Amino acid sequence: MKVRVRYAPSPTGFQHIGGVRTALFNYLFARANGGSFILRIEDTDRTRYMEEALQDIYETFDWLGFRWDEGPDVGGDYGPYFQSQRLELYRKYARKLVDSGNAYYCYCSPERLARIRKIQLVNKMAPGYDRHCRNLTDDERREYEEKGVTPVIRFKVPLEGKTLFRDKLLGEIETPNEDINPDPVLLKSDGFPTYHLANVIDDHFMEISHIMRAQEWIPSGPLHVLLYRAFGWEPPEYCHLPMVMGKDGQKLSKRHGATSLREFRHQGYLPEALINYIALLGWSYNDTREIFSLKELESIFTLERLNKAPAVFDYKKLEWFNGIYIRKKKPEELKELILPYLIEDGVVSDPPTGEEYRIIEGAIPLIQERMRRLTDAPNLVRFLFREIEEYSIDDVIPKKLDREKTLKVLKAVRELLIDFDKHSDEDNEMRFRELAESLGCKLGDVLMPLRVAITGTRVSPPLFGSIKLLGLEKSLRRVDTVIKQLETT
RNA sequence: GUCUCCUUCGUCUAGUGGUUAGGACACCGGGUUUUCAUCCCGGCAGCAGGGGUUCGACUCCCCUAGGAGAUGCCA
Image (cartoon, rainbow, N blue to C red; front, side):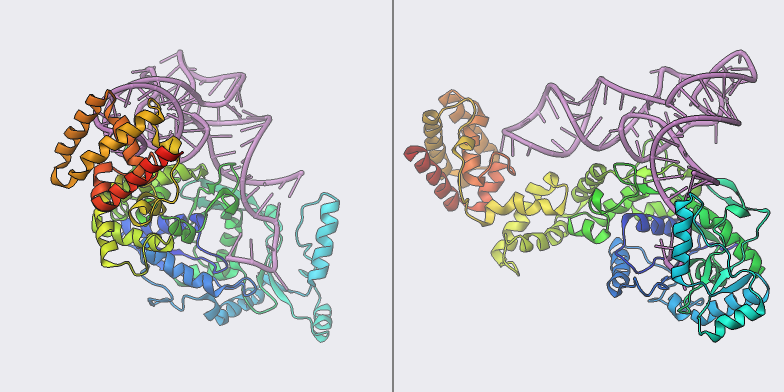
């Protein structure tokens, strides 16, 4: 059997971790088995539809770097891939179900539905449709029609018996039919199908071989199997993926932090890191290896290594992965990646001047291993482009020194600095080391006041490299500023 | 309420009857280092509980507890 899997998002919001993880597993499964990965847009809820959300689907996966073999934008032999363009199909098959006695017209108003629901809740009964219209007589039906009530079509869930479906991960799941959602709506009064109908029909006609979706869909599994049977079709294979949770064990949501891919992207995360981390949420390769490229995952992914239990999303670990991938970048690539952040922060002009480009390029090797996110860049290099607004004298003075001594150190340091450009880093280190010795203090205590003078903080990129990038003239001026401040305050 | 699924360090996980229960993140300590970071070394910490089955259970079965999801003219 040819493997054909799909990702079927509903364009009602931005692509989030959970959805992308589902998409990734489907994609990897297709690639690992020489199958096809299909994108289908489930835009049947026109009240929640967002044009932006549709664009977001394209942008997100383009950014992540995985493409579908069939979909609304690339075409394919099983289209159209927008459910809103397949309405006739759903209507036709909904009617077929009515004709075959597997579905019926329901004229109940939303108000009545809300009313019975309320009563059920008050009486601690299971909420659900009371099947009021299931056995309407022809006369009753005609009466509703004459009143102009537009009906919905509901599925006739068998009152007895049980339905069994097999899940690749979870095994057999058997459900008594009386526990299945009583007669769910298949076709809404606006003529659009509900998820259940459209999903089953499309998966059938698109010849989907495996349905991989989140475990929140398990309860509708039996219903879908019933639907396939009512149509006389063979259900595909099912595999319900473990869900992604927040720190508190609840379904991951905004209150846990970023959830949409566009947020992560804006916060300076790399697609490689996101993919790598997400792949390991509910799936593993072995007991040691955990760094994988998308390409590698494409060949090693297997359903057998899926985990059943839900996984908690760990922002810290994602950040760790991100640091790894930032360090793997070529300097040239990293430059392009951090540029937007430097511009956004106003650290450099838009577009950057040639001089700014030169400094950025020089700074990359200094900051690359210090970054965990692209957003770290502006803070790390700001001192190279902007004057230090304010010095903290506490920062200038090393713990073991006092103001007097620091002043003395800094003045001596300034003398050495004048010839800084004439020496190699090794020479300079030697010179400062000798100075430290002659002043009776440690190298660190000699360089710290200088570091703060140059960069404005005690934590900075390597000092010598920073001085070179900043230029000797500016460096000396900053040292002078600090010396003056030490003398006057 | 009802139904379903799940349960190994704080978190992600390896483990498929016999292991000192392994790795990673986080955290803590140490080393390298001009700060920080990187890198290296070390440490902390776990089989939810109770019954079985078995010579022997993290591994198999049952129960309990806990967690989650579903219960829509949303997907």
